Image (cartoon, rainbow over all chains, first blue to last red; front, side, top):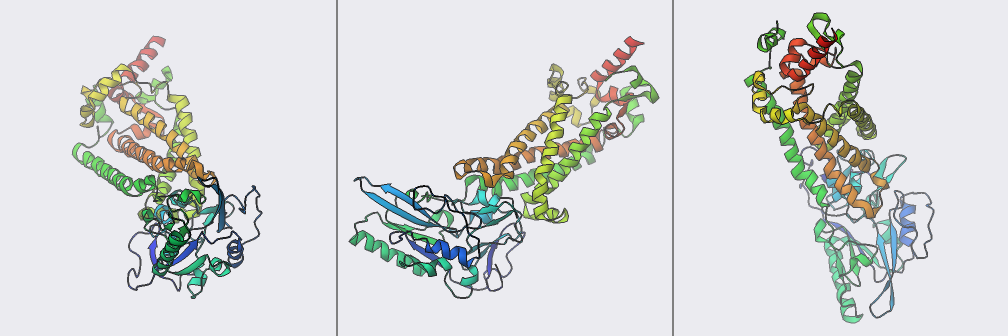
Length: 297
Length: 219
């Protein structure tokens, strides 16, 4: 994607500060997905494939209304389907549009070692720069939502761009535009949160969904994609949406304490050996020395 | 290992056969590449190494293959040296006198055999770190093939791989320091293969006695 009209906020694997950081205020953008009005029509899936010029992907029928088991490197947007049996024995069809969540604290970006391969724009969009991607797959380990997918031929990782090319021109993402029920909304983060809160109030007061709520997980600093759920206490029911996602502990340990302790140990060790050499020198300077010390003729 | 002809020329004795030297240098070359490219993935401040060595994509592609070469040479070393690297009672004594060794009071050291306790420790920590690096490296190599339910394997690998690499890095620094700077004559032994009799007697008295004893008995 072009970075020309977008301002970069974070850069992966980059030594030093972000050029132009904090010089301009820009509002965060956000997708709101209301799972309570999604009918699982897949218009958003088709719109995503069409707009992003991705080829036809073979589907897998597994006796549900889901197109395929998981997203692919060239299929970024998938409605996950779950037939949920409630406590009173009644059935509920849960549909969740699954794509990159555009975390405020992205685990993919944290884990990525390649300079500039993952960027976060000041509008909150997290975007992969395939020309700089080295295909190591660390972003796959860093993501708590199972989003980045590797193209095994080109060895580059792909995911939803939140249609940066459209958004930077003032348009809404392709998925939003295609939604026939109006369950998808796009705007600033503040506006989407307000809209979501209104809908939750409606669900609680008029539709009997007393556990209805907004999904905007604080463990990753909030997300650029938020959900309205019928039952916000059980997000796992919606295609395994993690209830408290965060950057994996091991990724954090590796990137912070281990890195600095390791650097200290290696550099400190090298300096210590050098000082040892200055203090004690070689065990013997030459053969004569060894002979003299060892008592050989 | 201890033939009389080893003693023949100029009071030198064969310490490493051609086979041992070759394997050592295969391991050394692959390790240098792995350490340099690993450092590139380890910290942004070293990413320039990947650029110099052909770019990030090439580096990501070759690092695992170099790893296989390194592990292969370590396994071969295991087959050559595992028996000689077994710890014996004298090694504990030697280890307890490490401060004397570090301050060049070698005449006060308990008599080491062909390998002293430090060299044995180096061998085994390289070996076990190599095993960890191989297993975690395979997980990271094919990380995209792992199902979401096995993601914990990625988390284990992502922390253990650099941890084991740091262990080898410590080993490597000490190994270079001892072999190139501290123990004059050691570097030549892994190039030409021989050391002086004086070197053998000074640093590996147990091994020296073994050679002299066996050559005397055959004379």
